[in-house]
Amino acid sequence: MRIAVFGLGYVGTVTAAGLASRGHEVCGVDVDEVKVALVRQGRSPVVEPGLDDLVDAGVASGVLTATTDAAQALEGADVSLLCVGTPSTPHGSTDLAYLRRALDDIRAALEVARPPESGFHAVVVRSTVPPGTGDEVVAPTFTDVPAGWQIGTAMCPEFLREGSGVADFFDPPFVVLGSGDARVRDVLARLFAFLGREPREVDVRSAEALKYACNAFHATKVSFANEMGRVFRAYGVDAREVMRIFCEDTVLNISPAYLQPGFAFGGSCLPKDLRSLLHMARANDLDVPLLVGTLRSNELVVRDVLDRIVASPARSVAMLGLSFKSDTDDLRESPNVELAERLLGKGFEVRIYDPIVNPQRLTGANLRYVEARLPHLGRLLAATPEDALDGSDTAIVATSEPAVVAALRAALPPRVIDLSGRLGVDVERIAGYEGLGWTA
Ligand SMILES: NC(=O)c1ccc[n+]([C@@H]2O[C@H](COP(=O)([O-])OP(=O)(O)OC[C@H]3O[C@@H](n4cnc5c(N)ncnc54)[C@H](O)[C@@H]3O)[C@@H](O)[C@H]2O)c1
Image (cartoon, rainbow, N blue to C red; front, side, top):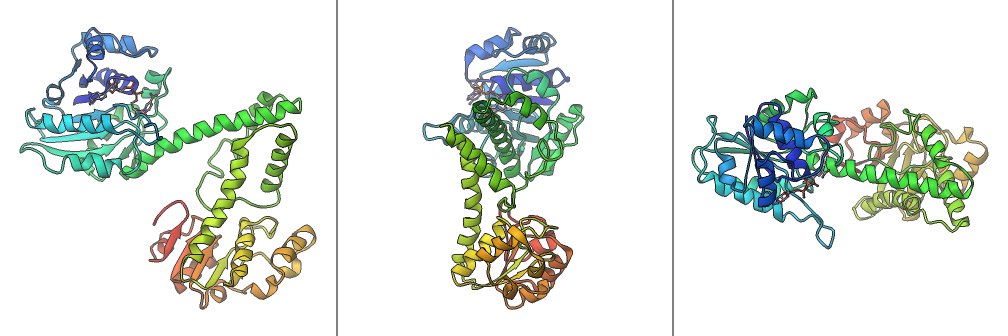
């Protein structure tokens, strides 16, 4: 394929040289003449292990060229890959000026450049851009193009890390193709086929969002480990050893566990032990803002659901699932109990169904907790999900138990707030469905 790569920085140079090494004809474009000149001399404008050799080999064999002229790069090109910078503005928003300029350069180049034989050209963003950029900035640039050109757009995020950019380019965690255009997805699937990864085809916004989720998670991991280190050092603990063993747990720690958006955490251990850790930090005058923020963030989840219900005309609520997770009757610090308590306090009619919770069988700390929070639990409990849903205008669903899903399907309450995230498309299709971190 003939490929134009816009931006000869870390991402662009690695991408250009990497694709050239796979036999594609690649032309790098940059507004910086010095970078263009360096590439033409077979040298990388950025320092990355192995990149000088890759650029040199591409230029020597004639498959890698560079220019400041977008029209020259677009000549007969099948794909444009946008790898320009997207820095922060002073307010923290993403500065899309370089991206807009590169898009305008491509649009102007279409007026003079010769289209590829197929007539189809894919404009693909590899820069990190906020969700909505593809729909609101990229696609509208090409609503009206010169005769002979057909343009499709996509987001294909890049996951390389500086310092191991070349190695990462050839061994990415995944290939993500975000486009509503099957022709672009096909071009990209062929372009990146050499990586041997089954491409993840998603919508543009998900592809844009994914990169932020990845980087935010990596940053959070660093701060988490550092906060553990800060607290444990005060207790004479070697946090490196703790975290080494911590990482050996690939079931709960280094795993997909707890990484789906949904409702708040609760139960008899997580809130208690987090509070205890915060106390240890305070006792030693240590700041642990991430851990402090974790409790605060959890409270916000409960408040968000409450606010949604209070702001609606709802008056009668069915809560399906009361314990903090399925298959336990432990109600201690269940955020669902807290939600029920607050709804009752605000005068809502609340009916509760939980397949496991039986007030006659609750004992000890569990019983004391419920008696303090929901003293009339026995009267609120319905024997079946159908009974709980009967006459209710809102269902708050914290379980994906089959009986609950079946009852929801049959009753179709006007509004379903899904705390479980696992109800399935038949429930998600109803008009009043609301997820917490997703839309149906
Ligand atoms: N650096 C990384 O490790 C990394 C990894 C993945 C994704 N990203 C993302 O990729 C994007 C690029 O990052 P980078 O580190 O390669 O940036 P960079 O600053 O190293 O390079 C950007 C290049 O774009 C050029 N440029 C600006 N406007 C242009 C235009 N109109 N036409 C052509 N070239 C133009 C600049 O001159 C510069 O050489 C950013 O969105 C970044 O967030 C970076």
